[in-house]
Length: 311
Image (tube, rainbow, N blue to C red; front, side, top):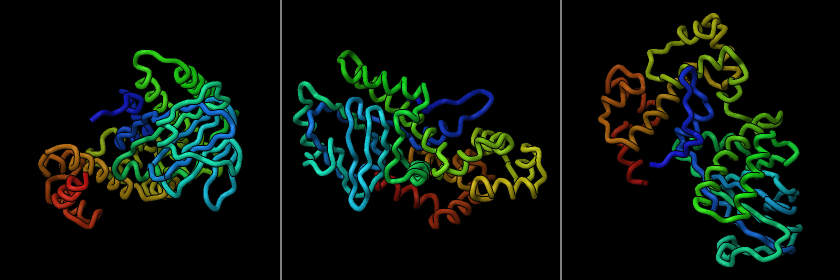
């Protein structure tokens, strides 16, 4: 299974939790169209992909959704769209739009005054679902809000899209990976955003230290007491603070993390339950099966069979 190098970043002294979550979700992006269009232009999307990115590399436009006000877009604005109803990217509100599949078959128009890049991300498993739930239907990071490195990456993406050369698709895909990390950073830093609890905890040095250690080695015999000691807090104060910032008690967070790692092992390896049990922090297969059944309402062996049947 291919995993984008952009997300497989593990430091010797600590774990980058965002990189870890994206790697565990097998997050990867692929550019599926770069289209030049003359106004008036419009592109229609089904809205069924779990996560799609759009960038106006050149020109201005609008994004239209049913039952929502149109959102203006400028050159180098970044848009993330999660799954839902159909939507449109258009040069002006109300202009006709062609289905994206037809637009791709036609290709780019000459002397285009707009260049639209569309990319799709794959995020798998419960970690991917958790990341998607932390995003609204449409997240727009405007060009003047981009961090300098993000703006530089988009400029590089625009330059690469406007030329041809060996390995171009691989370069565009990897630049799209970078765009996701930068866009998540930018969006979740907004005061109106609702980032995952572990992301909010990154701004707290005590909690961040604990989460980095737990993600680096979830199989370690963690307890609320050992986590509190690592945070330099009393057990009661740590538990209350962790719950307030992260959104769930530390023991429940640890269990959920172990279950996500177990899901990954169940679907991507042939390892026996006994080996998976010890790898994710349980004394034996029976303790693991009990915890897994409590979390998923089904035994791990049955969950594995059903998950593999769906793939």
